[in-house]
Image 1 (cartoon, rainbow, N blue to C red):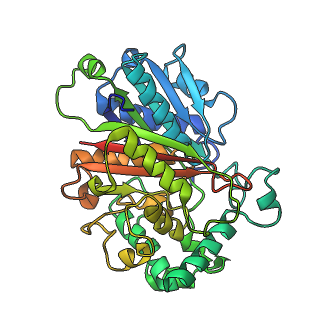
Image 2: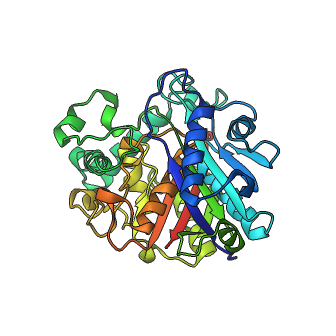
Length: 384
């Protein structure tokens, strides 16, 4: 099944970081939304509907945001798929545009975590895996240990993901952290779940990102006639029940999410020029690239060490800095990835520009469900 692409007329973000209590979720979202609308040249009266991805925003957060934007009365929907919430909102907007329900829509991903989350994010209290200690950090630490054992990979090779992504974020004005870190710093950081340390983990963050998405008729409404990046499709799958027969790093859920993207868009892994990857932990970037078929199994860490996933390499990954350095306000992440791909495909990403980028993929994995290999996974394909 192939649906018509959605054009991205505007992209906007505010810098991710840790904001004081008086900077509310609504204020973050309004800032990003206005930036996207300004980028698109879209007036309030030209917006048909609003889609909002968030996790901790509370009831009808999208409607609260819409009122402050002056978009009250419009169709507003809220989308919670944990870290894939923003990308899920994009998917629902893409489907609505393809169905002819709307021509110009606003998509917002937003989260205010610093006054809602103490320590790391936690699974639902009913999650039996978490109840016996298999929280997210522990699961990724097990993944790293298994990967090192199975593929003869060093701890340094996994830490190199953090070094690379922090080096990229130096050129991203929206990133929470904008300084390089050395391999020695990553290895010496406080242990969180052995072998992973603090700099192997994405931070608690606040932030918002937004897109104005259009049909061709919507572009004409906005008076836009130039070439705009297009969202070709967005795959969405959920985790499958694990029976213990698959290896720990098999990444079946990533494989299925990739297949959904390829089927929806006609794109293949070899067509992808740039990736925005959900690197909640260093090892996650490695195994998910392999699960998608973008990197051979067992080679992901070596690709990082050899510079293949750096800007200028054969497959640049997380030119934005990724979750590790750009930050990870969970509901905003998927939309932030789409903003980055928009700027890359326009050729306006400045010092982090990937030359010749024409096709981009963004991957988000959200949440855990006891006994499965994940909650929700999205794969977003964009093209210039």
